[in-house]
Amino acid sequence: MKTNLLNYIKKSYFSPVAKLVFQMIFKIIVILGVWRYPRNRDPDQIFSKDVHNLFDRMYRSYKMEKPITKPEKNSHLEKYFEEMRKQINQPLLPGEFQGKTSVKISAVGDLMNAKNLENSKDRFYSEVADLIFNADISIANLESSLTNSKGENKGYIINANLEQFNVFKGYKDKHYTIFCTANNHILDRGIEGFDTTHDRLEAEGFFYVGTNRSPEDQKKGLIITSNGIKFGFVAATYSVNKNPFPQGRDYLVNYIPFHSCQETVDLSLLEEQISYCIHKNCDFIIVSLHWGLEFEFFPRKNQINIAHHLIEYGADAIISHHTHNIQPYEIYQTHRDPYRKAPIFYGLGSLSSLWSSPYFSLSLIANFEVVKGFVNDVPKTLMTHVIGTPVIQMEYVCNEMNCIQIKKLKDLIKMTNGKIRNEHIDKARRCADLVLGKNWRY
Image 1 (cartoon, rainbow, N blue to C red):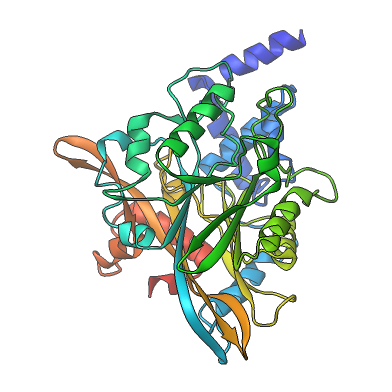
Image 2 (cartoon, rainbow, N blue to C red):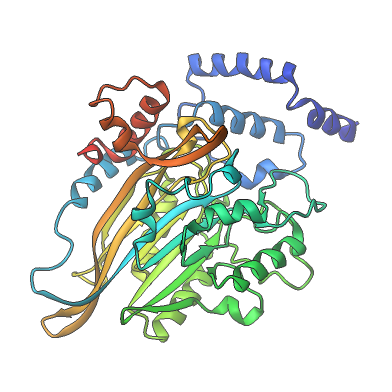
């Protein structure tokens, strides 16, 4: 009986009738304010085979229609990030600092297959290429297996073929430096998809972080030297969508269940990798985290606690992705070093998006500069010029083909002299205001 019910749920969940019923339920939920605030629930539960999973799926569908714009109840996070925004434009380097050499960093969120992406080569990045590829080191989350394999795994599968990858991997002769490969979709196509993805990245000379081809690699961070500054990179994901690891190969992905219902989260894997980078005398350590609750505009309070812990442990910057919409960022003043301020981006969104709604086609491009020098003759490597630029994926027709292009949201607003006439752009603007305040426009 239980199996028959589950099969019925699977078949009917996306039927037109079910969607109509859900829309009616959602209207009632909005009126009652039942899901105005986020639920406390491990996001991995939506991939369970429990009958109660239907309620979780309904909640996820609701958030896709109406993203959660409030933080957890009684968390005071709106006020917290309002105060943090005041610090963003403050001087980041101490007055006595003497810089000798610097490196520019850029980071974006999820890269995945998007409708008409293959028609958009040399157009997709044309209006934002300066923000991403003029940096010395550019980082993106590869939210895709690079394979044409159909595989056996079922569920929310995301993969990109070679043609699509050739569009989003770079612009003209410039490409990303590093791909973060620790994410919940890296095992969507099993070991074949994992190996094909990594073979392609290695063949084309890309660095990657967060996945490992040997047990020894999982104990290390990625180390890159640019302009005399040695960087360490580490990464982890909250989930692999319950896809099974090949027997004896659970080292393939840096997996930490950040959102489990346990009181404490075991961060020893990331701590070991950060320690490795410190031992290798890295000047600056960047952590990439694939986490957060999808379709919510604020991180959870425990995420902020974990991020601050990792910074105090030795990380110097954190970039995050997964939620498919943007979340705030802060400049965190460390306790371990009175001169050190660390950028923490809680959600960069999806640069290329499966969804065309303004909530999910809006993302952030993070830029900051790392400077190596001295404070009172003591060597320091600090950061400056931190900014998150809102950009949006737009659809248009070029040469009689449907294409997509990433545009700066500020430029689209300027085109109308600040008088928004496009509902899509206006909704995106309101999302940016919610997360970043209004100073990003100026």
